[in-house]
Amino acid sequence: MLNLKPEVVAQLERVLSSVEMLLPRAVKAVDWTKCHAANWRRHSFSGYLEAVKVTDNTRLEELLGCEKQKEVMINNTRQFLKGLPANNALLWGSRGTGKSSMVKALLNEYGREGLRVIQVEKEDLIYLSEIFSAVENEPYRFILLCDDLTFEVGELSYKMLKSALDGSVYSAPENVLIYVTSNRRHLLPQYETDLLGGKYVNGELQQSEAMEEKVSLSDRFGLWVPFHVFTQDRYIDAVRQCVEREAATRNLTIPWTKELELDAIQWSHDKTKRCGRTAFQFSKNWVGRYLLTQAGA
Image (cartoon, rainbow, N blue to C red):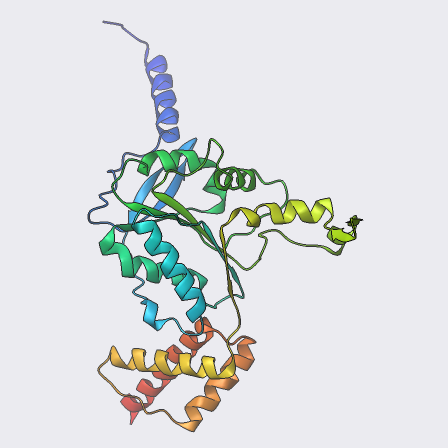
């Protein structure tokens, strides 16, 4: 048995502690029979899947103002669940219009049929091959969701996603689809100078090399699903439904009045946006004030 000096023992303990900090923490493998969603958690040189409890109970029928988008995403997801050809999808458009809610609603609708979701942050896209390896032999269908995604030119995660969508060695297994939401149609910022350098070929204007590069990633998504700002009528419908839902959770019925409608319109003006998120935020404010007034009456 070695008889080490105390200072050597102390040094070895420090080294072991440092190494331990670099290793992923010990976590249980995700039990996909009970868990429908997970996050990829980065740790040191790798990472792990961490089960999450889904608390968002959004249903497909509750999504207003996006019926065409809903039809496209439902059909694509059902094809995927049945092992039929299906596409990776880019859900793009104005903020608060239901892009993220669409994916959550799809999970709530089809989780019992084997759909699962793994959410990945932009910085962790470099671990795509490890994530794919972790689920490729599971008997479930996975949507890899990257929410609110934008890139700057030259980022490594941009190149990794591009390779995965392009069917290279980093391509997804057959039980994984990639759904991305973004405010940008091409996921990259666009500048006036990007338009310079275009040229005519056989009488047709060809895009500049800068624009070709910027659309090259979004082109790899089979589906482009646009989400737009609501009309005022759509917005009022969304407010009405949100108010009814907030009231129903408390077994109440809140009357719809002209004052409520005008306040909802003014709220959208103050927020400079008519969308589902604005309607939801207004409903919480209105119902809360209504109940506070009733309690003080």
